[in-house]
Amino acid sequence: MCLPIRASGVDDDDGFFKVMAAERSFIAIKPDGVQRGLVGEILGRFERKGFKLVGLKQLTPTRELAEQHYGVHKERPFFAGLVDFITSGPVVAMVWEGDGVITSARKMIGATKPLEAEPGTIRGDLAINIGRNVIHGSDAPETAAFEIGLWFQPSELSDWTPSDQGWRVEG
Ligand code: RTP
Ligand code: MG
Image 1 (tube, helix red, strand yellow):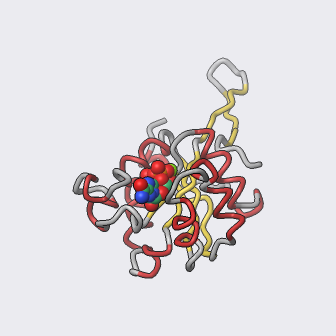
Image 2: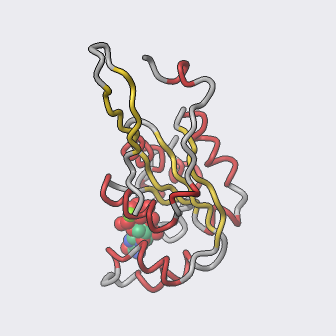
């Protein structure tokens, strides 16, 4: 299991070592987004926002992976179709890092039903149908932890500091 919180340390003013927490979210471009050539568009929105990409790969999920990922919905009538869809082709799996990234990514993604998603959001701009809503984002710290650990090995995640970090975050 890989936690969404990456602890790193800085020396505080008082000389004590202060542990800083970096929040992480699991984001996936679903098969429709990949097939429609929207990977660059979607990835670019997160880059331009200023979040940090710490994990990225393309894979066609197994049924086992998809059923675990959407396990919370296993009793719902749409579950089988959802698993069929998400395993139907390549998915671009990502981990993004930054303060508030879980909630912010959900805002950037927009409502589950694309016709109810605000213009300016990914679903609001790029999708029309609930079953083809192009992107997934973790909805809470607990689900982010679970999903990051499900989709990525710890060795597939990069700890790095963007060279322009001081232009993204004060202090
Ligand atoms: P996601 O997990 O994919 O990021 O989507 P979400 O949080 O916005 O919505 P969620 O309730 O978790 O549903 C997962 C996916 O299942 C499909 N769905 N279909 N036919 C339906 O009533 C229905 N409800 C949900 C959607 O594709 C949704 O993204
Ligand atoms: Mg969900």
